[in-house]
Length: 99
Ligand code: HEC
Image (cartoon, rainbow, N blue to C red):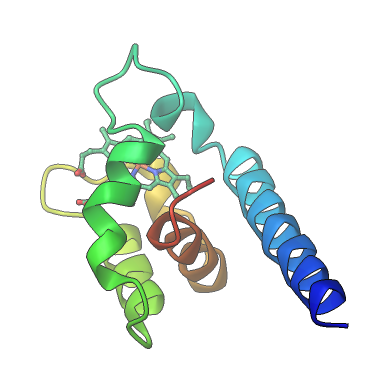
């Protein structure tokens, strides 16, 4: 029984991570962050930066809001047009390691 629970938990974990990667694809995040041609930080780099928020309630939502707003002079269209829900989900995915 215990083994089965672990198996189900793993399945859930990987499918959430897959769904969020698809969300990143659909929102055009890959064009910059999965391609080293542009000077956008790679997913592993972002995951390392945001790792410190892991386990903090509300961190994904707050960081998502920040991403949408962008910093002065560095406002990126793909960041700005995210919905708050998608931004939260994507930030959670990054915080969790962006696998
Ligand atoms: C046009 C290229 C481009 C696209 C498309 C893009 N980004 Fe970015 N992103 C950048 C660049 C360049 C930076 C680094 C500059 C900065 O920190 O603002 C960045 C920074 C970030 C950061 C770190 C922000 C910080 O200050 O810590 C996150 C998180 C991020 N992007 C997530 C995403 C997500 C999620 C998507 C998809 C909705 C996405 N990006 C789409 C270019 C892009």
